[in-house]
Length: 454
Image (cartoon, rainbow, N blue to C red; front, side, top):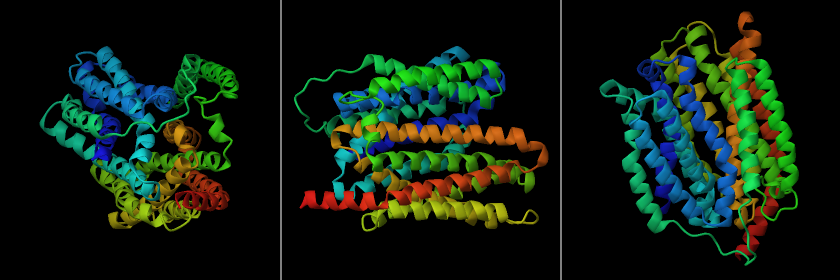
């Protein structure tokens, strides 16, 4: 029941990206704004989450994961009501930013709470549940949004969050565990690092997004350079701190660093494919928009089905080797899509190839998450979980940016999609190599855990 509170809010936070994407044209018309401006309704939400994930994870480590979660649920639920009541573009942007604060509070501590809820030997099942509900929300989002918009207004896309938020708060308040006891040395939240973190990630990701949207190149380049310059000072300040906000202490753990690099590369590979494939289905194969949407479904559906099985599988097998093999499976799925015949291919022949990609990614995600979390000390689980979510967002953002760059360079030659898919294979194989390189470290960590348990 405790994990139910986390899963309910995870579903809401993921749905609030996918369902709003579908509603953007309707909202653009109602607020009388351009399509490019409407994208900010999605962008501001994701930007705020990225800026606040690590500071909030640090707050959870220092004080209480449970309290951070409950505050996040409250903010997210109230902000959903604000979104539903929005009468102007400015109000919806402000409401979405506030909603991003709530989502960051939840995402920053959900891994830490999951680690406290589940016994160590079956932690993978809890992490697999997280991956499964994210896959469900991703797969169901467009269908749910289309169903709601077909019978009522876009406001209901946010109203449905309110009862689920209330239920999650009630369950969480009564059943979520408190932080494990730590040493008695006093620790205070580092406000300077928190502001630096928000500024650095805000500037860098805003600049990257601006490049992707073909904004002013000079302004974007200046903001990017400024972000990296402030980032250099930010990183230097983290060394020597007892519980640094940017977990440089965890990066000293080779197993953890390799897991972060694996995660970033894997999500770059995922977004390179997920964003470019609809262009193949619509352009090269001539499928309709509805058919294209259905053809994208086998991927998250396969991930949803395979994630619980992956959790049980890695309880008996080396997670590092398992993750590497599944990245290879993912790469094979992408290669099969590239080699698919351009003329007369059936929907079924695309669907099973997409399912292979989903199986590979689903079997990769759970073992990689397990290694990443178990490599960190219990007292730093919040920072480890926050960095895990940050790695996912970094990978997805870089993947989306690479798609934009590849399309700009190769659009006239007609090889844009295949170029993106080829890059996806490269990043998948790099992720697999990182995973293989940590196999021995994973085995030693598991053996040490078993010895400690005995």
